[in-house]
Length: 402
Image (cartoon, rainbow, N blue to C red; front, side, top):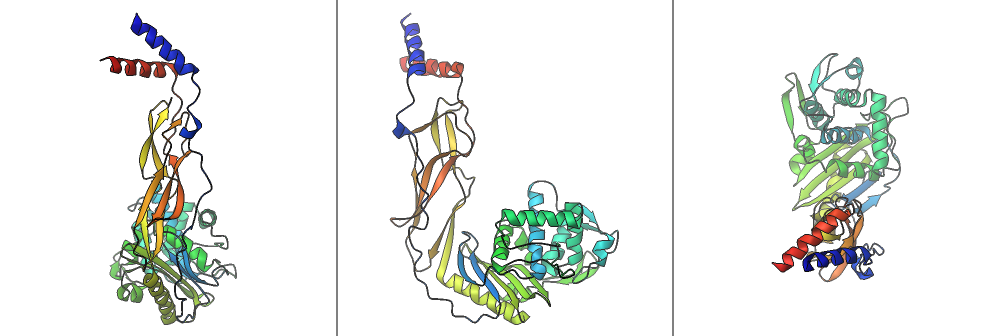
């Protein structure tokens, strides 16, 4: 009888007690960014022949150097960066597979410029089309992909422009998936926007497997292809992509990327007068970046860092993840170590929605804060019903009297 009375009293207290004290609930403050200055570095002093250039750290997305980065220019075939990105994202969603077969149309056959000479009715796999675009910059392969994935070239172009908007490419408009000029209405983009889509494409590691293929003497059993970026990828340490372009209107363009000791740089040059100067500008910018900076990837956006107790939740614990990818850009001359500090309450109250801010993580460089990042709930936790709460009370009570 005494046990029954204790149980009843406990249940009544559970329902009557107010929520826990306010200091048990995390209250997010203003986001802290770039508290520590990266530091002074020597200005870039190399020659530049390109009209627009950008140097970006691929891991953090930080802009390290820019010259006329936001002026729209025709990109020529570096527009295919977006074409290839949409294919890889469709594969990620399960809508395409490398072995899927596509059929070449009359429009693909009649497309001008660089091509792999597809005839009407030819079969080509998704992987072959990606290699054709990444190595040979094949315009007919880009048309086949666009028609297959978008239903039509026009439908695919809508997808390209929609994705550009999502990536923050504010000064970009695509008219086709190839980069060829079309009656004065060709694609227009900027060096900065090219860096943005290049960075996104590089989140798919498979792309550099294709962009580093030097040549194939019997591609698809019938055609010789050679990497348009061969001089760079064969001679630059760590160089593994990404895409070249040229038309009379656009000049020589290049989005070049290289990785060294975990640091990846992206160098974009647009409207350069010659092939040699295009490569020289890109290499000089990459050298400048690798000479002065290093970047470090710490945690992915969906990586579980810890768990926390959920009071009166249907589940009693919830995983916490960072609200975005966590990385640090550092001067190479700075030897201080990067560390993190988690700031969490003792518990949180149910109900909890997925993405709710629960705590924060400070990214430290030595004893200085680089930035503060929200920690959020990885999934929703509804409030427990009274039967679940009563059951927990009974279990806890029994465990105390054993």
